[in-house]
Image (cartoon, rainbow, N blue to C red; front, side, top):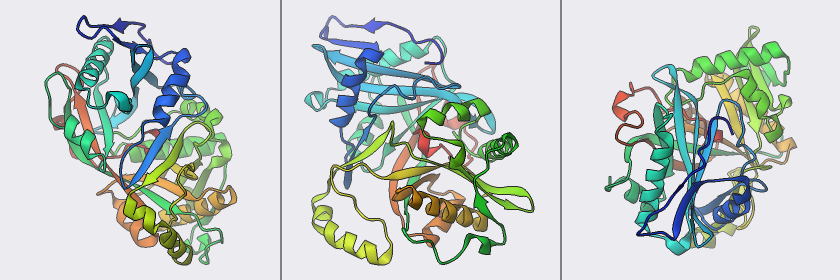
Length: 386
């Protein structure tokens, strides 16, 4: 894991049975078990799993990933992580930590003391080399978690709401679209693997990301390091206009190390699911997968396109949908701020399902920047990294 991971424990005389520690390789099976058993509630209840190895993405260059867990009687009852990397804040690259993967065992649900002490333990770990900012996302349907974290209880960090984020799932058609990509008056999308092409896209993406808050700042080494996780050279596709890249993105299927599993539907949705899926086949809307299945989706990753260039965006998405169909991928996943310029265009063009979440700046006294320091740019975290 990049950076120094502190090997320490925190105990309390009043709760000596609970021990906090940084996660090690030997904790892999226990962490994966907790992720499988900790669904994210909503109209569609999901588990976000990390099979077959929780630590598959733990040693990436440019990142410092730290996982904290709590044990009670030898049993893992809580886990959460923080990934620190360079992201753009107010147009400048800054060290930013993303807090994610917080899960609490059902047997200790409602134990505020565990979360409070876990956050305090994390604060002590970060104090030596803190990030400039910390942020996180919470699904809008997870009302219980939102209410708890937004209350500002003693001993907890401040959660400062900064905007809504929407994840779009675009269905992949099994037949090629009737409108050809070349009708956009641009060169058709294609795979290009040369070093100069990678450098060109890298520069374009960082230029675009500079206009956004919390968008990642990339280097060539970071791309190379993602190859074992499924981001291969032929995953990148481009649209050119007058010889220059007008739009580019990668199709990143993460199912080899990170899965979204359907666990249940709200009762009304479960009853209507057969009828909805029948209608979806006729209208080309996204279907509702069976309970217990892994969502067959891939992220549209490293998207680079001018905010107002809808022709290039639609041409790129059309090409990626054809490629996804050949790879048995059923959905493309994209994430934007709700007020982002591409959202309305994609809603008009495609029949997609939407999943909403809320983005927060998280800070402790003397640790992490405040939302008041942000200059109002549109939010742009990379959905594939959340």
